[in-house]
Image (cartoon, rainbow, N blue to C red; front, top):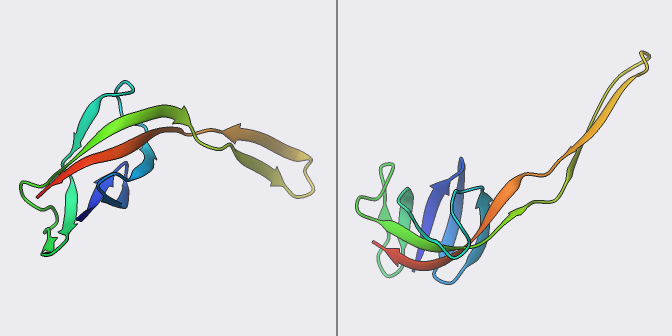
Amino acid sequence: MYAVIKTGGKQYKVSEGDLFKVEMIEGAVGDTIELDQVLMVGGAEVKLGTPLVPGAKVKAQIVAQEKDKKIIVFKSKRRQGYRKKFGHRQQITRLKVAAIEA
């Protein structure tokens, strides 16, 4: 069984036991959270939401709270000697899917 969920402005296709990273979600490592924005549930029977599947939930456990890879942002203007370089590391949460309820 799989599900398509929406969190942090992005959509993810997940199955039970999957590890995946999302934009930061509040909670401590080891906490169980419910993701209730389920757009689709698939398996023997496919359920499509309009836009959400009613009563569907994905239970996931927080595995880690960490930072993603560094992204370098470089700004310049031609012939002006204007240069700026800085980096950004987005905070992410790693989740493990425990159960999909449809």
